[in-house]
Image 1 (tube, one colour):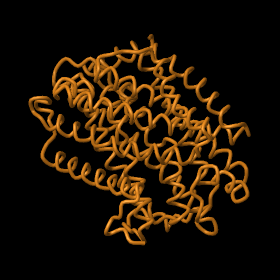
Image 2 (image 1 turned 90 degrees about the horizontal axis):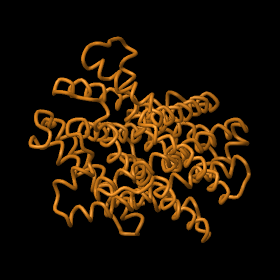
Image 3 (image 1 turned 120 degrees about the vertical axis):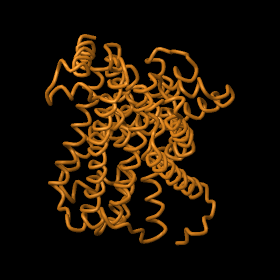
Length: 428
């Protein structure tokens, strides 16, 4: 609690003008860093690998577009928590009819468990490959480590922010190493980043997967909760300062996450596109990396995957806890929450279901659940009766609506593809 209280006092001193200097801004860093884990979770790995292996650097622009949309919605989520002092789930409970609230909670709860399935399995797969152990033991180790990290939540928000921030740094460092090991064609990467291009229907499907799984339902809920009542704001001027710090943090944190995703695509493009374009699974990517780029590159890849799986699983548990408390005003011990959300992952392995297929199906569930928080967030942040003078302006509202339409439309395509529904413009 000491570091949390010290951080709170420091933020109050900055807001009152008693404390200045560049270093004081770091006191406000934390919520967006935690939320950014959702954008580098194991669900992103397979999609980015498939994009790079199949199409080289061509789909990098999709990663950039997805990241810009994510920045917008995470900033709106943070704004809601800072201005109202309530998170998105609490606002929904207080403003929507009871049947709608129950339906929103049910969908969001399923989404939280689907998210945790992907994250938990991702960390376990990484451990199993790195230490050559059965997947079930990788899951046990992942469970123990995540339990250990969640204990720190009792000490306030700052220790958890520092732990997750360290893990984000490890993931980023791993991919910094990867792009130095892999012989990347930087010219082609630059062209792919700024030139929208979808060579065929399969590329469109992969693009849908990248964008459709970028704005994560639990991250939208969680960010609003991480910012609520974090800093003691006394008046609107304080809120403006906190909002300014928050927006800067969102841009930087998600820019880092976006660069990690781009690095994943570039590494896959460099290593797999020529001669191994059919690589699409995490296990295959690991085994193929070793002969192509050496054991060091393969090991760094697994370290990043394990760190991603563990950290995102912790954050997913926190989000699930916040969703339940917000919608139902009901609290369960976080260790119980962690136990319940682990059950689907263990069940998948116990029945012998393919882990990668389970990851794909979890993304489908997330696609179904995503409209709930996105639409609610746009509604609340647009209302002056909720946000007062901090309601978003016309330009931001139009961009948010267009972003929501783009993501939800692409999610519809993803769902249609998954369930075999023909889409007229998707002709192979």
